[in-house]
Length: 220
Figure 1 (tube, rainbow, N blue to C red):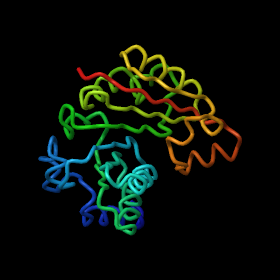
Figure 2: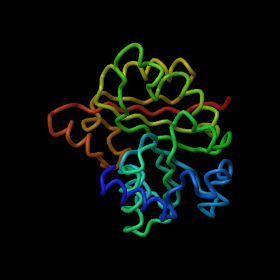
Figure 3: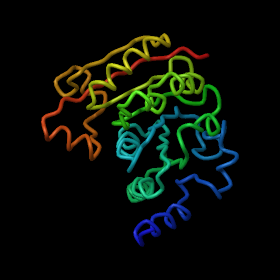
Figure 4: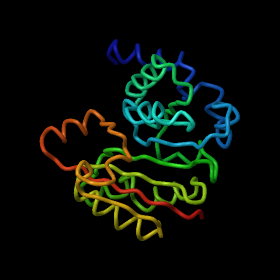
């Protein structure tokens, strides 16, 4: 492990806005995010595979009356988002270090209002399909965690993943579906309030168009 990564892992261990193995809330937070961490009743928004937390931090600044949680397994990436949130004095931000496969172990049924999936690994090979974050098994988890009418957002530069995702959200009965294959030239552009991840900026600078969808789900 590099010295830089070691420093970031130590930073996570000391940061109150990072919830990970070894911290008391890690085992008790399910169903208690509002009462035990945020100390309010505001809506909860997740950014899955959040990386450095660009959306978690950016959206939390734009919507102070919502609670934002970035979820990722990579501790060195979470550390950057955690520090950015602390430097900005944001109190409506948390980061959860866990595998998304175990999301249901950290959020109770109908505890989540929105989910953002921003530029996930497209897992392009057929044998990787089950790892796509819009695979039916993941969508079933999200659907259980959502409040009635919870909103799912997806942004990706990958047209194959986007087409696949459109099929999957329609198959589970999502409503109010809105989508575009060219976000920055679409009326939907304002929804993401101009936030770009590092990878999104790279894709955009190379001339790639950005795909976006949002839809609402019924609860299970």
